[in-house]
Image 1 (cartoon, rainbow, N blue to C red):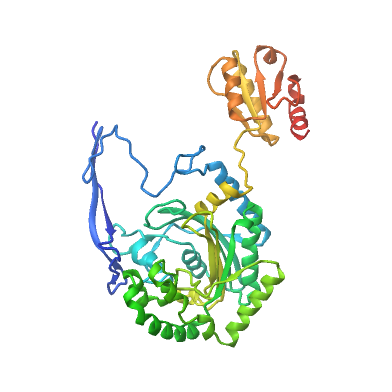
Image 2 (tube, one colour; image 1 turned 60 degrees about the vertical axis):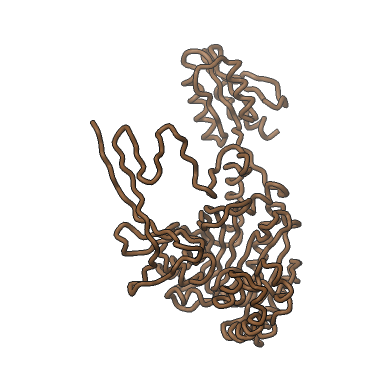
Amino acid sequence: MRFFMRPYFTVNFPQNAVFQTAFSSAGRLKHGKRKIGYNRSFPKFQALNNDIEMAQKIQSVKGMNDLLPVEQKDFKLTAAFWQAFEDTVGRWTRAYGYQQIRTPILEQTGLFVRSIGEETDVVGKEMYTFSDSNESLSLSLRPEGTASCLRAVVEHNLLYNSPQKLWYMGPMFRRERPQKGRYRQFHQVGVEALGFEGPDVDAEIIAMSADLWDKLGIRDYLTLEINSLGNREERAAHRHALVDYLGRHQDKMDEDDKRRLKTNPLRVLDTKNPALQEVCNSAPRLINYLGDASRAHYARLKAMLDGLGIRYIENPRLVRGLDYYNQTVFEWTTDKLGAQATVCGGGRYDGLIEELGGKPAPSIGFAMGIERLLLLVHEYGSLRADAAPDVYAVHQGEGADLQVMKYARLLRDAGFNVLQHSGSQSLKAQMKKADGSGARFTLIVAQDELSSSSATLKDMQGRHSQQTVAAADLINTLQQWKNA
C-alpha cells in the first residue's frame, strides 16, 4: 500500500536586518512569505526545498543544542548537570515563597511588540515570527519570559486579591549569531514579584539572586551593578537632553547607534562602538534628572544592600535592553565568560501590567540565561551532578533475570536507584559494565543465589567485603553500607 501526503506550511521570514513591522487594521504583522512543503510517497521522501536522502543525517538547527547524558565537544553541559541545577532552583525558589508558573512557548506577536518594544533589537531583528495556518494571526516563539508570565497573570486575573511571587523556567528563542553562551534556543530562569511597590522588594530580589550564587559556589566570580531609571516623566526630560547631546556626535555613530538614537536613546549608552565610548561617558546622566521620590527609592535600596552586606557598583550607563524597565535596574556580570559578561539582569517594570491590559501594579523581576550561567558554574562552581545508580544488578542462569527484576523493584521502593543489566552476557562482562556505570554497589544473582533465595552484594569502592545475604536482609544491609 502506498500513501501520499502533501501538506504546506506558510512561514514568515524577515526580508532584511530590521524586519518591516507594518501592521494591518487587524493588528497583524506582515512580512515577506515563503512557502515550505514536502511531498511524501512511502517509502520515498522528497523535500520540495531541500532534497534530503533518507540515509543522509539530519542535523540539529544551528544554535540549538541537544542536551545529552555525556559532554559534547562544543557543549560541555550534560543532562545530569542541568538536572542538578533545576533541583537547586526548585529548592531555592520554595525557600523564598515563590510559586512556579508555566506558559506556552508560542504567543501572539503583538504581546512582545507591546511589552518589549517594536524598535528593540529583540523584536526588530531576533524573533522567530510566522503566521498560523489560516494567516489570520501573527505568532512568535517567545524571546523572553516576563511578557508571557504577565500575559497569563492578566488573562487569569491572578492579582485580583493579593500580590504574587512567581518563577518560571524554560526555553526561549532569538535568532542571534550563535557563540559560546549565546544560542538561538536558550533557557531562562525568571523570578517576578508582582504587586509590590517598595525598595524592600527590590533588595530582596537582589539578595535572592546573591543567595543562588552562594548555593552554586560562584559568588566570588560575579559583580553586581545597579542604577535607577526613574519614572516616565524623569526619563522623558533626560531623553530630551540626551538626544540633543548625542545628536552632535552622529559622525562617530554606526548604523545601529543612529537607529537607537531615534527609537531608544538610552540604548546608545550601552553601545559596543569603541569610537563612541568617551562620548557616552560624558553624556547627561539620568541620575541627575531624578525627582525626590525616585532618589529616595534608590537611596533606600542602596542602604538595604549595604545592610545585607551585598557589594555593588553604581553604573549610570546601565539601562537594560528592553523598553519596559523603570526605577531600579541591575545586572550580575562576570569577566570569566569573555564577551558574554551578563549572567543575570532585571529591574522594575511598574507600568507593564497596565500596558498589557491589567490594572496598574508595581512589579520587579529578573532572569538568568541557564546555559551561560552553567558554563560559569561548570568551570568555577561547586554544583555536582551524580548520574550514577546506587546499585547495578547482574544475573546469570535461567530464571535469574526475573529474580533480579524483583529485587530491583524492592530496592527502588526503598529509595535506591537501581540499574538492571539487560541481555545475556557473561558474568565477567556484566561486572565490567557495573564498574563502568559508576554504581556504588553491585547485586549479583546466579544459580546459587537463586536456589537459596539470596543475593550477593559487592561494594565497588572496597569499603566492605563481598557478602551473600538473604533476600529479607537485602535492604538493611545496603542501607548500612551506604550510610557507613
